[in-house]
Image (cartoon, rainbow, N blue to C red; front, side, top):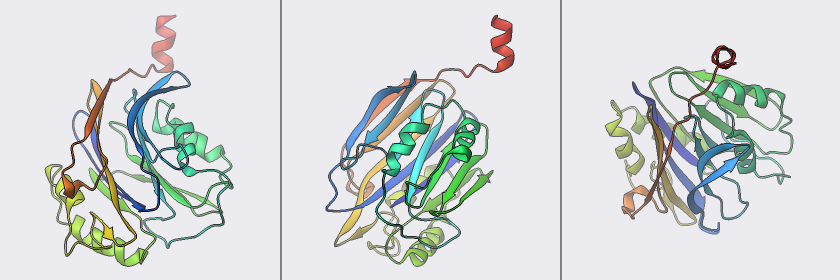
Length: 249
C-alpha cells in the first residue's frame, strides 16, 4: 500500500512515496548503496522479504511499487504469492532506461506475483506504468508533468477518490510534500498520510534526480511526525547509445 507522486523539471524529476503497512510488519532497513549486475542503486530493504518497494539507480531511473491496486480498476486479491513483488523490483533496477525495463516486463512471466502497479521514471521521458492484475499486463505511458498513484487494501475506491481530490489542489512541486503530509479532511484511513488502528504510513521517501546525481531522502516514519531521516547520493552515470559506442570504437 503506497501513495506516490512525481514531478518532472528541467534537470530531471522528483518522486515522493508514502509507504503504508500493517503494524504487524517488520520495520524496513533504511536505504543503502548496492550493486546489481554492475549498476549502483539506492533502495531501502523490506524487513519481511528482503526486497524493496522503491529504488533509484545511477542512470537516473527510479522504480516504485504499489501492491494490489490499479489506478483505473478495482483491487484484486490473489492467492499467497510464490515470490515477493519487491524482489521483482530488484531484478529490474539495474536497467539503464525505462524502455529496457518495459521490454523485460513484456517478456516476463509474472504468474508468481500477486497484482501490483509498477511505476518507472527517467528524466526527459513519460513515466511508464505497468498494471498486473494477476492474469494480464497493461502498460500505460503518462506524459503529465506531475502525477499521483495510490493504493489501499481498505475501502480502495473511496480512498483513491479522496486522495485524488486532495491531490487536485497541488499546483507545484513545492506542494507535493504538503500533499504527502496531509491529513485532510481528517487524520484517518482515507488521508494521504494514513493512520488507522491496524496500519499507518510507516515511512516516507523523496528521490530527486538532477543532471549530476540521484539523491534519496528517507525517514522511517510518517511524514507528519517529522522524524529525522537519512539522505544518500550517487553520481549519475551517462547512458552510452549505440552511436556513441560505435564512435568510441
